Image (cartoon, rainbow, N blue to C red; front, side, top):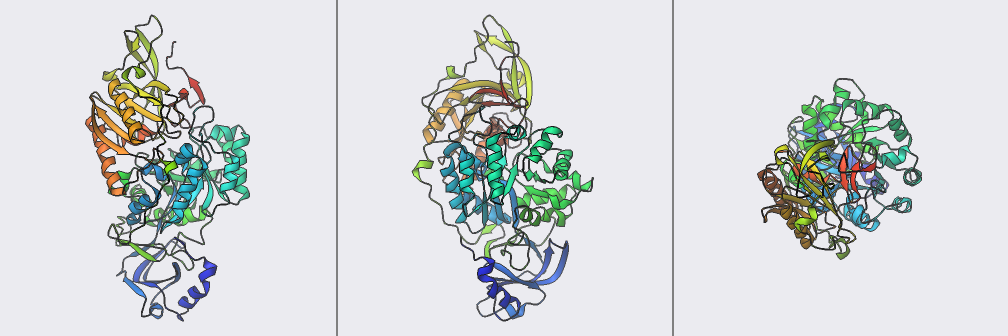
Length: 598
């Protein structure tokens, strides 16, 4: 939704601040959480005009006219609206509009979104769709142009590709604030012309380059990546990762998503090593819709950071001013100060952070966890639907893995799931052979994983093994959300269920499903690009919760296992992944054989 520029409303802001004109809204008698000075100042009024802060100070009665809306803070804290510095709307399984509906009551008033999931399915026109939807929201939804579609050229086949010309074009769009996470870090380190051209186009536009360095190597390769231009990074999992990024002039983004718990380890760079917190940012990266509706968004992250030892003021700065400064928007948002967008939370407890009122661009949008103003839906065109085209139906035999001739046992490479982290382990396991077909090992928690090509109708299936989900009954879990190329990814202990799950997703145009012994236990339909639902966030959250519950009923005890499932094809995060090209060793960025001794 449109908001006047500072220049367009400056005369009125000055007049309100001087007491010559009434404000649209005045919040009275609050404790000002000033993220610039680090102070909490009691007895403060806030005057708002044309969606921007006009004045902050004691006793602004002169700004109250007959038509001025007045909100009594009654001694509660006035906190800047929370900012998510890096996230993907598609991971919530909902549209931008529905994501906003879910997070506004939790105090999120600004998001920096990277729609690289839809970019991998629909390319530049998919990005444009989400860009335009973002502009229609009552909160600030800035878009970063996806940089890597595919994320690892030559190791996967997406539905569409993004190149330097696309990036250069997007830099001229109204709402593009930078380049999305540069996942192809080996390409940057190697001086790949395409990757460096995308970064150069972004820097020429004076915008921010997002980073993604998913390697524990903090030596020459990391230094080369930093020299390539990324300004931030959210892939750290250790305190030393955060330290290294800040020392190289990058902002360390610490994430707490539905399944990524990376704040606790990295925040020690501040709490124990004493690094300057101004160069640290909190974000979510990937949040499941059930998490958004049931647990929260950036308020959840801030509370968690405080629980890890950060002072409340510091944690709030890392979710407000630090984020705005990083993207060059400090004069627009991130603090309760004159001229900025009037994004404000009222809360009675700075550590527990209950979100009691949410004001965005000067309008009261939520009270006590509920929206008080509805948001109009956004209509997605037909080309964004019916994108799941595997080319044929599948049967149990499509998931047979033939053993080398004459073998009664094999040693296989197995993807090892790591709870609450994006990286996987490259494991090796001995598996039996039955009638020439390699069998799973339920006792050792080794089941099958398959990737089915869904963009070009080839009907191709790549089979491998995975360990760590804990499934202890015949079942299959399938999803058309399979970062980043988004083919159909299926994990199962029963091949007939695997086939049924894949076929059902093709029928409904995409989604996520749990099947056991021929019966569907849970289904989330995702008809928009096979990634997002066209239903309300509350409904999607219920279905998503049912999906997680069904996985649990099949024996999976992992926290938010669906998020783990959906990332098993992400061939830019070590150690072992699956793609339509085969099994990928992400420590070498090369295909590897399924059998160790073949």
